[in-house]
Structure formats: structure tokens, C-alpha cells
Length: 311
Image 1 (spheres, rainbow, N blue to C red):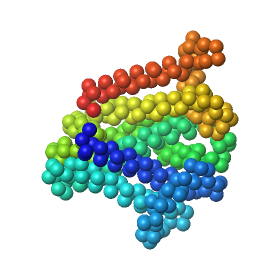
Image 2: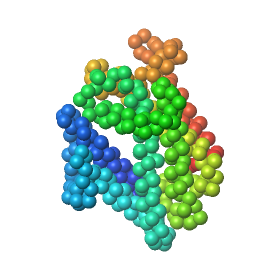
Image 3: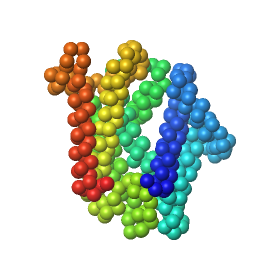
Image 4: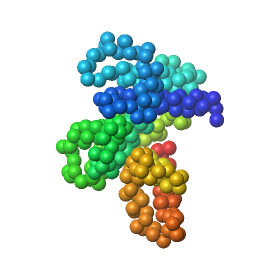
């Protein structure tokens, strides 16, 4: 691994961590009167340190009575600084201002393609699973934030929903987000498709092959496969955590365990129904089989992406 790759990885990781902290701080503001759970307290403390240099400036520029925009102002600064670090990894190409423009563009593009769009898809899925249990989580700031954002988004796209059944809502959201990501990637990268500046950046920073920008109809299935692969990866992690908590001796009535169980319940029910043979005494291996299948499906998706030129 070269030094430029290492810088890119560290800049991406730190940038994503700071962005998540700032977004959580921004969206949790209306729910703090319920009290601060350990997660909210930690994020609030971290965000105050990040936002401190921008707090006064932000309040002078934009004043809103119901919500402080300081975290979003700080988020823009963080993304811009990460873009400068990205540009530093390709500074040897001699692109000058163009290199900085591409670096900052990639940094802001990653906010949507790697965090907001997959995160919103997950958020809708989680909210669907928790919809019948919302009263049980009153006072849980994290769950209330998820429900508030999901509700606002569904209301925003309600005119394109042909049904409010959970499965149809999820499929509609997946298609809508895929199309949005497709348009965003195409519109953002098209100006650089004929430039050699992008090729100077480490491979890890190049979201899609620039060859696909000239073939937008091929770019669309690549974007959809990529979003589907990201969702399956998240489900894989959640199922793995759920399986580990069941073997860890964690109190089954612990709020984290209950929340994780509700989110994973459709997949666990599916696994136990179709892999009932995997139960040996008190030990159930059906979820482990499902994990292997998800891993294999992800491998197939990655192979399809390679054949389409999306990697």
C-alpha cells in the first residue's frame, strides 16, 4: 500500500466519523428534552468540540429559532478539508486547481454515495421493522430520530408510492434512491470524464469507472447492484451481531438486544423456516447458514459489477 492510499483511507475514515457525529448532533436536537442516553451524550460532547470554531460564525450567517445549523456548517468545512487531503494524494500529477476541484468533489460525492443514500435505505428498513413497536422506544433518542427522518422522507415521496405496504414502500425507496444516486454520480463525474486528473487519484477514491459515464444506461444497473450489495452487507453485520448477542449471555430484555432482534426478525424467521434442519438441540445454526448465503450472493454481485466494469 502506497503512502497516497494510506492518506486516502485515513482521510475517508476520519471524515466519515466526523460527518456521522455532526449529522447525529443536528438531527437529535429536537429530542434532547427526553434526556441524553450514553450515545447522545457522547455525540453531543464530541460535536461541541468540533463545532466550537464555527458556532459564532454560523449563528451570524443563518438564524433559525427551532434548530442550530452549526453542525451542518462544520460538516461542510470537514468535507472541504477532506477534499484537500484527497487532492494531496494526487498532487504529483501536476493538475493544480483541477486536482483540488476533483478532490473536493469526490469528498462531497462520498457524503451521498457512501453515507446518506445507503443510510437512508437502511433507515427506512429499520423504521418499517419498528413501526409496530414505536411506543416501546419513546425516550430512545436514536430510534426517535430514525422514525422522524423516515416519516419526513416517506411524506416527501408519497406521490410516487403505489402502495403503503411495507414491502412496496421499501422497494419504491430502493428504486428512488438508486435513480437519485445514478443521476448524482452521472452529473457529478461527467465534467471530468474527458480529463486525466481523475486517473491520478488512488483507485480507492474513484467511485466508478469513468468509462461508464459515457454509457449511462449501463451505469444505472451498476449503481443499483452497488446499493443492493451495500444493503446486504449491512444486513450481514446486523445478523452477525444478533447471533453473537444470543451467545454472549446478554440480558434478552436489554434495549439494544430487543432493538437488534426486532430489526433482524424477518431474516431470522426466514432462516428458521427454510433451514429448520440446522437446529441441533438448543443450538440453532440456521442464521449461520443464511449468513453464508448472503456472503455468497454478495460475491455474485461483486462478480457482476466487475463484468460490467463498475469496479
